Image (cartoon, rainbow, N blue to C red; front, top):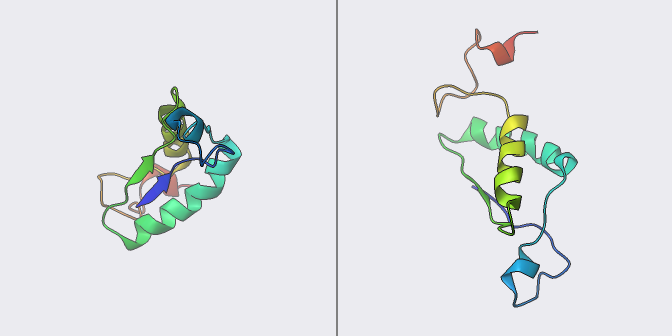
Amino acid sequence: MARFHGHSEEWESRDIYDRSGYRYREQELAQWSPKVAQLAEKASEVHVLMNNCYSDYAQVNARQLADLLPAVDPPGQWPPPQDHPSNTS
């Protein structure tokens, strides 16, 4: 399991919007993509929680991270089969 809660400068604030008001840049998520993929190689399930719940930050960042990860079908099959489109050069 990986939990993304942001790293707002207001982390110690009692206001949840200040604490969770961090939107990851795509470059940051791109650095995490291989780490999440490595977790998937070692586990039958991987859960990624986006807890940066200000505005639409969690939903947008979840979609961005999902788009950066290689496709896997069906869930739990990792690495993808040799004939999977993600394995073609």
